[in-house]
Length: 313
Image 1 (cartoon, rainbow, N blue to C red):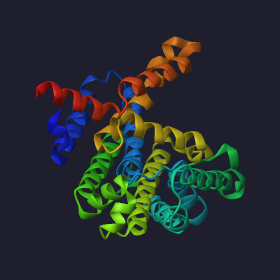
Image 2: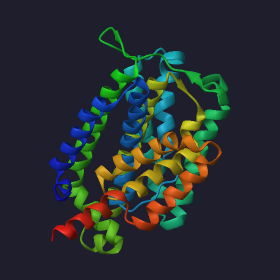
Image 3: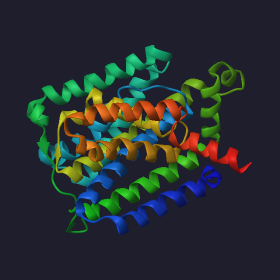
Image 4: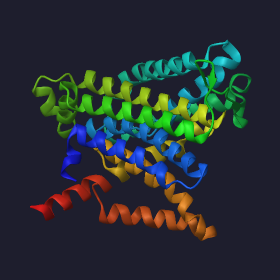
């Protein structure tokens, strides 16, 4: 797995996975599950940039996800904005909120920052729940099907390839960012903000930039999920969804773009696979996640990569 450290190795691995999986899928159900994995992985890549590279914790990232999801529902229904333009507006709105909120809260550290981002996410979820005339309230609201060049996008197979394309582009952009001066600055402040500041890095500016970028990733993923499901509810912006995103980052491996995909795949597919245990599926899910974190403490991808590299040496 040493080649997976390189940018092109990671992109090649993602491309191979995307191209090979349909060969093994016996029905459209598997295309649907894979599509949900690609969408979650896109959001997790953005969150991993914030947590794994910049060392900043966010427990309210589902709020940005929900903004993107509701943008493609509210825009066409209430404002007459085309779906694609609504998705762009949702991403821009999430980025703007991250910019406005991030300036004060990113001055906090540790659990203070976690609680502040949690509060932001809860506020977004409350707005989506309470503004029923715009959002449909707790029941949510339908989303118009995406139409591209006069062709209606529908069906799990088509969405599989569309979301996979977004995932690939998102991973490519993230990997380029990691290899850029911004990425090196993020890794420096992750190790020590004081040392980074002494080295001439504008810590506040770099943390704000990556916070905005991660919010845009989440909003785009939210828009894709809303288009795919044809329905959006406040659960997309809920606290539990934020915890799921953070868990995916930690499970797959912080500071690993490929780990973001693996973490999303594990957390999306495991509940489906464990349904055979019926009443005990949640117990089994919790047990397996505990085992992952006990034996793969740095996350699945970094731990396996290091162990394989150690054996090769």
